[in-house]
Image 1 (cartoon, rainbow over the protein chains, first blue to last red):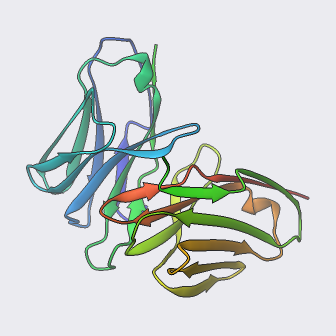
Image 2 (spheres, each protein chain N blue to C red):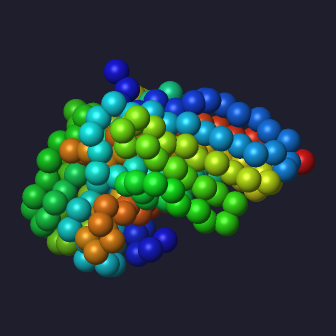
Length: 113
Length: 106
């Protein structure tokens, strides 16, 4: 998918456990994003990154942290998963060359039980 | 408050029908995306536009910047067009509509 992959694709975890989702890109794009998608809410921004070690919060950042130690990887961590974090998570990259074009990853379906 | 509103929320059509999905937004934008998401699937960008009209096969997207409105049209609809269509605008950040669920019946 245009050089962006998410892992894992599916995960079931218990309340209170830490979880890390990975977004990997192969095209050296500067901007990367993490969204969650829930029925009735559409896609909501969790965190985004505008470069290595440069990240900022989105509208639903509580309970999440991110890290970007190298250009190709953007990690989303739930330090202590809660049932309200059951969702589908999408990573996206913004194309540096094609103006404001975006590509989304295939999504990670996370279930917290 | 939603910066992006789509209508209708759900749409069922017979194969071959002409379909229109509407998107209105309340913020100043630099561009607008129409996205497609099949059930259980990833999100694909169909169009990015900042003015006028674009056409890909049976899909047509238009935007009126002054009226802050965009439409996505599907001509000669087909069951494989069944998906959720999401309008998203790029302002200081990316704002998403909640999507229009389209079902095309054979």
